[in-house]
Image (cartoon, rainbow, N blue to C red; front, top):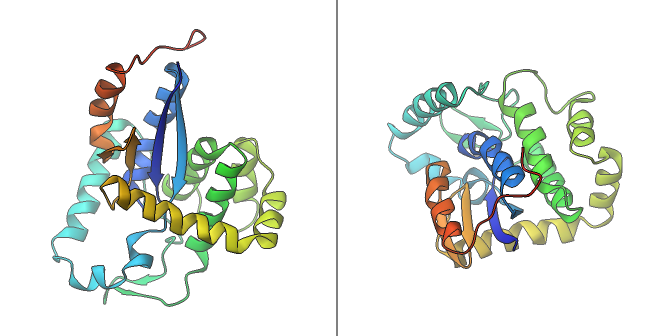
Length: 220
């Protein structure tokens, strides 16, 4: 029996990126269907957060994500460009945010087409691995989309034709995340129970095991 898990995920979250390869591995090994639900990052939803946050928090996150990437054997570098336009000296979030809205809508469209997990895997590697500069330029996103089984030009045409729907989906995803009992990403929700953070994947697996989690017959 397939177990359905909602995955609330953001393109600006390094922890979302670091969790994704393991999520993909679980989807290959176990009969789990991950419903990818893209949310806009806190910097867009609540820009005052970075103004008021404890000044020790940003450098700690950087230190923690670097060592976590090393432990997981993942390439990792802060994105260029950052999906969020922000002045790090003042912590000010710009009013115009072209990158995060574009990539988040693409994530919603990928999920609509049933390729959400594959797309966030490819796109997050593009953004966070440090392999390319200017991930938003040239054919980089088109290549990521193609590797995920999608066609970027078609995705962008669909978004242009139905942008209010995509933006409403982003808002609905955030509301559903909060209704499930959390606000951050990555958060997994199974039967209404939230599991926040990449370090709760084992707890999620334990819970799924109580509900008949099974390996796929064709698991590698």
